[in-house]
Length: 415
Image (cartoon, rainbow, N blue to C red; front, side, top):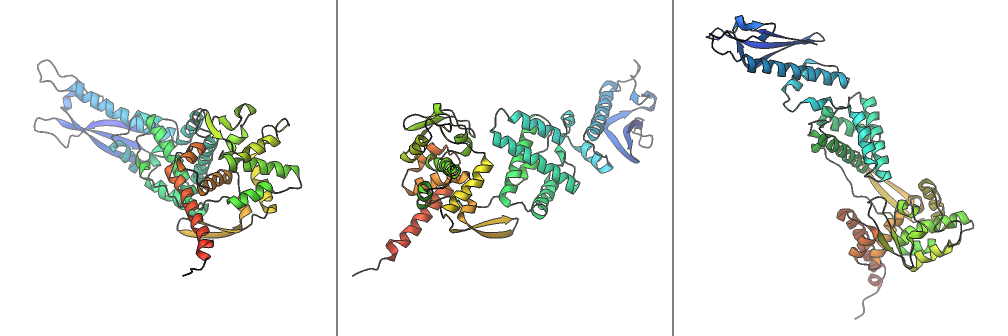
């Protein structure tokens, strides 16, 4: 890149002064820009700057005008350093865009998009749950794959509506990404863009226009009858019995897998637990123990498994399906998902849909059906999202209505 300042001899003012123009050449391109308000007499123009007037001449604003020229030169060099650091091939259109962007400043020379994303992940380790940090890593990898596939260069200033549309099409058409997962990708990207904006890495607010898609999905959980059938089932192997106990303990307490896994004997009191919640970082959360959860803990007291046998989430999800299959929890269950506007309906025997997280859903749903107050359930389950909790209320109300139809509504009226 080469920058030169010249005076326009073809545009003289009445007093004989001429405006100053900048000429920027790069990659075979040439851009001309007038420096607004700067004018000079030809005799005062020397080495692309304005020299001071003599004592007998009127003041020619050489200090102010030269400062404008220096600021313009600094701005041009900043733009090309930005291109270099971010591996962007400069074009005439892109340079024109940057030189016209009043918000473009030195902070544009922040680390590259993915370098900053790595910093974002590292700084999150002390404030976010391990699962959340893993999700951040996954999203970073997903974005890299998008960039490789689409050849769309990801930089702070290219996260705009063009990116959103290309990324959405890539997710739906190439990756068969479900709408709700696409929404999570966008939510994490916006979190990252907010984080980097607050650190002055960019001034781009286009990402705030991105819409997060979210479809209502089914609540997969066990009914009270299915839960008790699983709880009382006699398995022929100790491994499956231990898997069942771990899972049912979540159904009876509402604890997440991550909280059950870190449970220690010191967390257990006579009829309650006191733990620090992993996901929300809430300290000293008190969880009441009912007779079923107490009985499960009693089974492992003074054994090598105390307080509970442990399983990786992957193994738990694998084996609990086997447990539910053996217990005949196999009612046909249909789930509906969307990829963009494409609807996909699939029906499975229920045991195939049971995972560690359905234990918590079972606790909330069954507790509602048994008449426990919503406020109490929220306190026990440490549930703060009103919208997601309402899904369980809707499910329980629907179940009650179905039970009414299957009992009272079957009776014949007598007169």
